[in-house]
Image: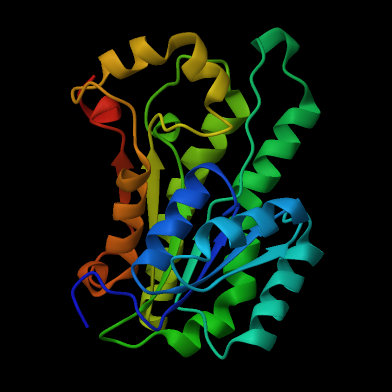
Amino acid sequence: MGLFDVTGKVAVVTGGTSGIGLMIARGLVEAGATVYVSSRKPEGCVAAEEELGRFGTVVGIPADLSKEAECLRLADELGRREEKVHVLVNNAGATWGAPLEEFPAQAWDKVLDLNLKTPFLLTRAFLPLLEKAGTADDPARVINIGSIDGIRVPELPNYSYSASKAGVHQLTRVLARDLGPRHITVNAVAPGPFESRMMRATLEAAGDAIAAASPLGRIGRPDDMAGIAVFLASRAGAFVTGAVIPVDGGIATTT
């Protein structure tokens, strides 16, 4: 098996039917994995199966992962279909922007629950399947999707989003310590600006300025996100755990 080959591995990508999740799902299936994607919308699952199925095996499972029962159901569904899960990508998320004086409590709860609590609940629910997959030489992988807004102070008033992503980064480090002895690595990817539904309005309003602020002079492309996911899921990333990796063209670390 090549250094970046994930043939024979089973991967689960939450929120895998659009945006960054779809980029990751495509990268993993092209690298040889069997990929399960989840979305609240059944039609999104069907569309992802059709779009990615030409590259390999992709199965969509609708699930509202803001609810603990649905997290457990998704893990149970995978357990009925597969003996083990090698890669869990916790990508499903939400954002909310509003001025401080107007920021609603319900927005705080919604974003923190989905962005921070759900990755914890899913990782816990998938532990038995991840432990079956992991070995000392080739651990199972948990990849949490954070954000550069959890590293730096964001320019937009997305208070709950940036706080949730900073929490994801710390949760990643804590879980990495706890799960390493169980042959599971836990890392976080902190994307910068990528073309996605969540970023669409921002990029339409200020995309050129955002690209110009990056040392590399552009926003992220699908291959940039696919590449980091394949690295972390493959033999190339087997000795990396507890890391928070910005994929942002240098915005968070040099500007």
